[in-house]
Length: 544
Image (cartoon, rainbow, N blue to C red; front, top):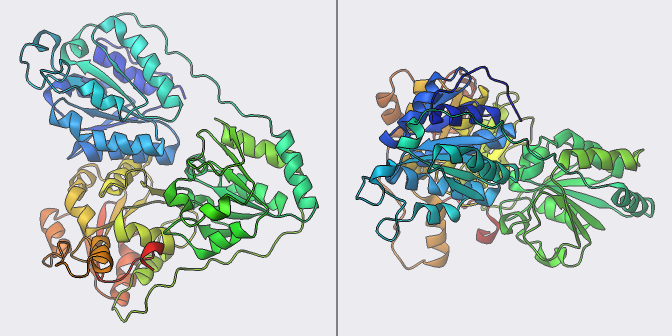
């Protein structure tokens, strides 16, 4: 995506920020510091870029990730050198594993100090740490802009990786950022997306259905990012197919044809739908272990056609069709198939059988109630642990977007990702996180308050790392628990820290219903803390 700007660059930092705008980026997340301040200053002066100061570089990287996941564009994060540069690495690792195009701009020590004991020098190994070696492991491409004239070539390298759906990094010494701008070549146009021919597949699917066969469409995160809910529903209708979704593709399944979510946190009905199919048409799902757990034996016995930008992460696939324009491919496939056969009955979603409980507030009630009160068209981000498992499994399907970071499964990622989405899109966003995640990155609430983000942070507080509690109970029953904590009143603490923030607290179902009606409809940032039990077994198949 390209955006025309009349902003005139005067420094290399200005050129860098203008290139961000040419990539369609309008929000730059990060944490300020000496070796990044020139780019922050350039962003502040640019009329079409909004700089956002986070509290931690991991969260800033997650913000860029969340903005990219929901918008379908590119996210950008800016950090300084030293600890700042290293703090963003886990966020880039998540973006790499989940194939999210995030551009990291990392300011480093001025060139005259490199190799001479400069503060936070990271470019002269083995005397210093090797920043480029670190970045090589978590990005699709990186470049060191060690001269103003090398900027254009560096951008070509990183833009190529971003276009492939991978994170990338530019390392720019402070004195290069401050150097006068020189005439720059126009940004290199991105190659057009490719959509392979769909005729032969359409004929194959049509023949299978005509002979009485059944297709199950399995949609994943790539389909979610491209907002293919309606096109995939149209394709499913034309084939009389059932739809199942991976956790990352959950918001594609909001139709009566959806049999639920696959994987260890998914629904038995989704696995049943796949078992009854004569062919799986997998669209934009990488079939990682969290997507396909419990399905490997079935996959090895069923024809599978996989379509997407990235190959599947299993050897069971019969045919992989590389495709960088999944949207066009699905539309073309539907057009070639033509008239719809008789529609199958609506799919019924079954849930894992969790133990009966007499808790004042069980996780299914919590997630159901939240789902009932979600704003129309909002985005929902689920975090790790019991909270993530419950959200993926119990959240009602609807018209909202859904994001979950299962690449690295990092606690607290959803807090930053949801905030980045809210600030970049300006649309209501709900984050569902546990107390463990809150203690890691909950202070990004400060960022939400500072910028008036349309964000509601829901904290499910069980005063524990509860999935670890379950694992201790199941696998180490004779060992004392390391994961139960003294009670903490998170709602009171947050209210005391942020007097203007709307804070709600619920300990039973009635309080939760009342709190959700207010917390999920407030215009500005809000926080809802819900008391849950650490001993409740989550809807996670290996535990059940």
